[in-house]
Image (cartoon, rainbow, N blue to C red; front, side, top):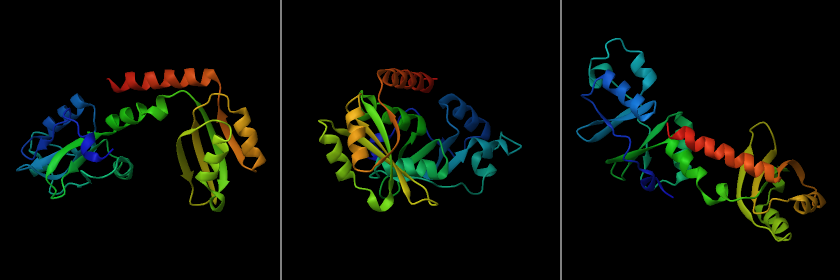
Length: 220
């Protein structure tokens, strides 16, 4: 999925002639803490709630309140991974999406991204989760997949976490089986360190409850 597929019509951009008070009201209405600002339909920057609250006269227009705004964005062909990276990098709740010529196309929000990820098949599908700890030089997803598949199972998704002060990787595997005992035994025979496993039916029930709670939260 790419950025242009993530554009939402639910969050409109501000105009440079809108007031600080208008910006705050819109942020409250759309449950975000950032909004794009346009001037003559061109994207000039992203304004934050905290920046506005630092100003004294909120009846002034945005172009008078701010000489310069930060300008984070992604291009419309950016992969969803890059979109997530930019959101995390800039610590923003909304990210503008521009065409190749930098024409403003729209934006997407962190709430929309979380909902989209939560609705992906690998998250919703029942199964077990296995967390492995491996040396960076020993990491091989192909070997991990071979071990899982030798037990008549499949890897639905994988996630890797690393730390700059460690040579270890934490690899999380979502597997399409709830009972992981045989798979764990096979990994251990290959000298893998099992950091954690989540394989009980009660875990899936708890995961579903958390998922439902997340979606209910995002509706407000």
